[in-house]
Length: 418
Image 1: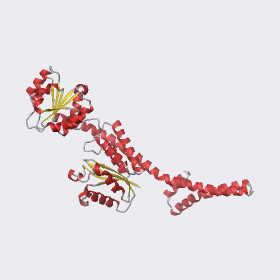
Image 2 (image 1 turned 60 degrees about the vertical axis):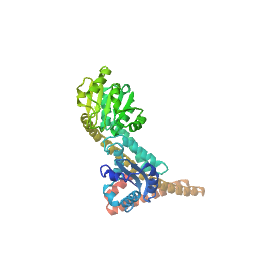
Image 3 (image 1 turned 30 degrees about the vertical axis):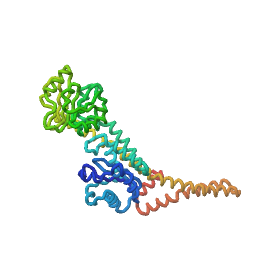
């Protein structure tokens, strides 16, 4: 049995290919049934995200194993093999274990240390378990991986620092305001960055969220998710004074929030401070706003400096995380190798028990026929000893005849002679 990981990701394939190799949730069961029907596959987990599609398998080593798996993947997705082959990577046994641990810990992600991937790996494992059998080795590999990812998060700072614009904006807000649970936040726009910021802020239980957008319909979808109020861009002037924090990211060619608008808001707030985070390009907030007392304006360039510093911290933490992964993957493989000896040990014990039972039965029969007890006991001990040492003695003699010093030494150690 071999553990195998194969797949493509953001490092090896463009998005145009990655999207053609994905397994949708609706078709995952069908894909797993098809995969597990392959004669060499004993168990499998399919991980499919926007940045990667990977198969984690326990397989029997067979001739042309790689070629047959590539053929299955391409036939399932109706792709030519030459389109996919150059973008695929393969990992076996220890490398497969190490790769999965790195993926789940965020060490192989597009954004180093991002936490979402662990949840995606857990879901892939749960989906693959449902209605399908996994080999004990594959199941143990995933369970071990989850504990390793948790250890990486606990013992390193791999995920402690903001490395996305949205997260950096929220981190900045938490540094300025002691608690976000007491502040009102105005989000301007409804694109991906604002969506991420809204979710981060919801997790920190802000007092109130307001979303201002040109089209209310799109903003309403996000508002329903995060529990926010929706207003139009024209309403910003009259509602700005309510906001302690403003995070803006639109595609507007001209500033949406001007100096005079902020001045009026500050006057209405009796000069209570406002944090304005402008992550739009071109800018949504006039730069002159930053000159106003109690208005703290940060641009996307300011956030980028925070992100670069934090990324450096994550890279330092990644070195420590890699050490943990290497240690844990080696430990898992040692456990796996030990499992390979379980069947051999069981067979050896059964063989010894059969020899003992056979000779014990003969000894009891001799006693029942009136044989001398001391002679029966001595004969039993002699025959039992000879039968038990017969096979090891032959192996020692063969190793000596072959001049195989290394094998001879291993046998001596196995027999407790050294």
